Length: 146
Image (cartoon, rainbow, N blue to C red):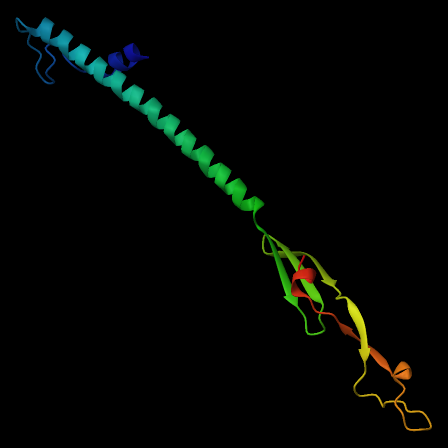
């Protein structure tokens, strides 16, 4: 390949090595040989540096591709919202679009209903066993966020 480049690039160069000068001098053969050797060494250095540059570019391209793949893999976003009724709404987003959504109901416990009338017996004593109950969420943020 070096010979091809040299023959192409040196095609217009006269024997003397000076463009535009067609006359031969006594030292033209030696200087022409030096010029060719210098030029071929210059071409060799450029070719080697080009190979190194291409290898570096390929490595950077691979790194960029790996980073892009890692970024796409991490584009799953999960958002948890605690709703007023105590439930937790879990929404999964893939690439900014809703992939799934579900509601996790809280653990409900029975508590006495403060708005209901308190039952009393004929003597006027409170009967707690017959008191109306209602369900309230037992709120535990750490337990429900799992």
